[in-house]
Length: 119
Image (cartoon, rainbow, N blue to C red; front, top):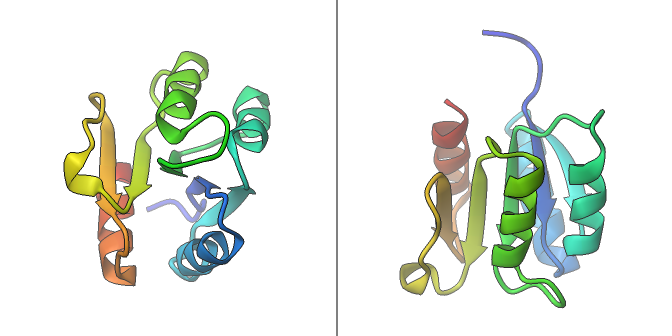
């Protein structure tokens, strides 16, 4: 197994929630890029030198929502795995290759979901 850390882009407009997710992912030995909304996320996605293994985004973002962001992300990076976090997980339809984790989620759920998607 390579020692390179997988890089996860976390898009969450709630600072506290984002901080918690980032802390958890860093504890799980992932490298994390933080975006407080779609604009910042798109800056990372548009940067061809920035490697991203997975994008985790809140569905309910201000301005461009998570689904719209995912569409844009897939245009730029067609293979990018995308994980939506939502308080209404059971009611969301997600496109192929995209996954949903319901909020609130446990550290174990997040770890298992992310590792499963990156495997």
